[in-house]
Length: 297
Image 1 (cartoon, rainbow, N blue to C red):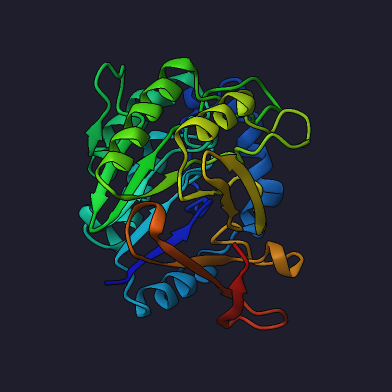
Image 2: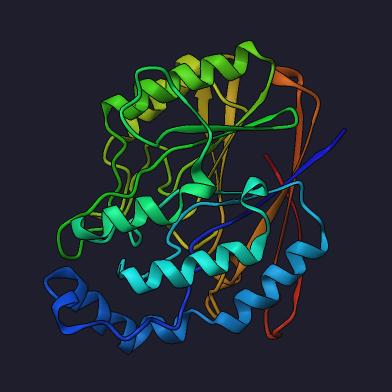
């Protein structure tokens, strides 16, 4: 039986609620000005609604959302984002991991953790120290969610997993392999150890790469860069595809940067699985969502 996984990311749900003055301290103040000047025009909720409608018409078995559901991590934003996640379907059928805009400042973390529990609840690794990483088993697939979203200084959007989360992820990946499951790793920041714009990459990407070399995975999906990205990381049995998706609400830009989502057809079990992928999104010169064709994994 085929498991159809839909992947979208970086919806930056708006409009941004009017913040209280005391909430605009430090990094949030700069982020708010940036939203007012540019980002509010770059992200369209009408485009997001069109994209989600097209995705739901394909009746995916599960939906993976890899972060940046918010903009500057306001409590009112999380309430708005929660309603949007609820519109996608039952939390049992939707999984979420946070990005850097969700963990925008340290004081956002308690609200972030409380708000999204229904979409992150799953099996936890023995000896783990928090809600991440989690494993949600759906059919023959194991979705393993990691959180790379951490508070960072002004003008920095990098991610970090940390030693304890990577060690816990190794235990979940091993457990899923033992059970013959197809392992899909969800993360916000691109995990491959390649050059990135300063202050935007995954700080401990080499440690993540070492994790995959040892434990393996069948697919890794991410967001953050707001563009289609295809890469591979070495695993114990060959190369593991790493697929990044554009922002789900991007109203303009080059074709590989306009709003899109990905559909992964997963069949078989464990290392003997077959995974094919297609991209669908905002067609150039139109407001219509259509097919971009297959992705070569």
